[in-house]
Length: 272
Ligand SMILES: Nc1nc2c(ncn2[C@@H]2O[C@H](COP(=O)(O)OP(=O)(O)OP(=O)(O)O)[C@@H](O)[C@H]2O)c(=O)[nH]1
Image (cartoon, rainbow, N blue to C red; front, side):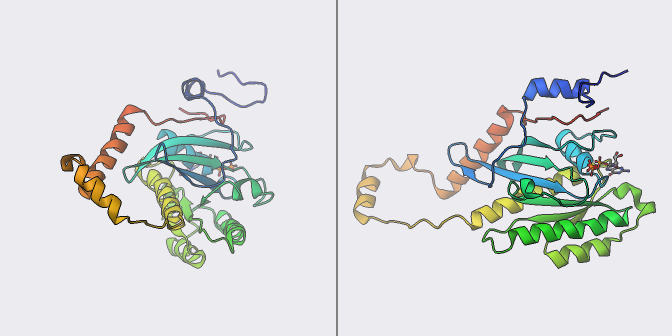
């Protein structure tokens, strides 16, 4: 029915189309969330953590394509890039769908790369919830003593499996509050908006954190210069603060209209 390539990774016609349309982006070495002044674009690197089968890939693909996948290669680890608009500002969101075999081992690759973490468990699997503690510990040990804080979201997935629930919402909440992280419950196979909200919240928190850590620039006020420039300026051309804000919003909207969000898919997802 479908052809498989040499490495036994299923490449759907959809994925082939996506690769040819948007190009490829392998796991990259960008380390921090930074503002790129000339484009005004923030970058946010999100690592998806959690034990096997918790739904990391399903959530990642849901966020990127609005679709639910049912089959994939669990051993592949890849990074996907999507241009998003969060709070009217463009963000280049990179999502690493990790594939740890048995808990957090050799995790420097994502600890050094990410500036936000989503730790996933399945609400119908107690073991996957317990595994989250290891990931939360690993992240908090790694970020201990670092001035910048890294947003962490604890995410209960498979909300559609309510009747098989093994982890109560209050258990999720109390674990999240113990580690000082945000907490959500979603389902990768239900509505897209809830899943998108989680990723956008991670980006929002990471941006706040970056802004909080921006070095404070000294403000120089030269009275002489101010007099010269004001006297020679055409007042109508000087935007007020309110106008300047409008201009910023307009330009980010214009950007979102100009360019469709770019998306790079590499993993052998089977998307129907
Ligand atoms: N019912 C239900 N099934 C889900 C949901 N999310 C994922 N699944 C299923 O759970 C299984 C595991 O999902 P994955 O997304 O592959 O999990 P993962 O965490 O990426 O697992 P690894 O790649 O092995 O690390 C798959 O069969 C998915 O179809 C969900 O929200 N609801």
